[in-house]
Image (cartoon, rainbow, N blue to C red; front, side, top):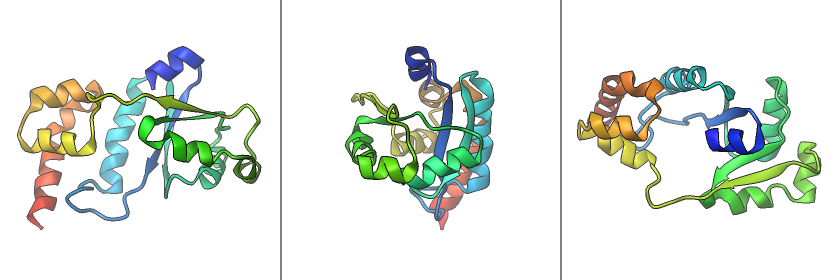
Length: 157
């Protein structure tokens, strides 16, 4: 997010896919996610807020942004998602979402060192707070043990 802000000068609104269920792969409920995302948002000047969304549907999400006071001008995503988002900005979908001709997809190139949800969960379960603090924003470091408890409880089910 910070690189995008520095390059384009655009503030960020995080679109967070709301969990449909709580399970081993998705151990955090919406309330818990809201707490840790709020900590992240409040610690970075370039993040304006966050919105829970149902899916990656660009038409629905553009309207949700507007409903929350934001006009979408770009969408940032990793290499793994870039092609599907580019397809969602074809002329047909641009019109359906009422996106400007200047709306762009900003690809964030993925590297072998990128963090995945699975990696983060495993670091927490392995009690590797040192690694957790290297791979996560400082704003959520204090939540390590709460996250660990949530993950362990879900794993017991």
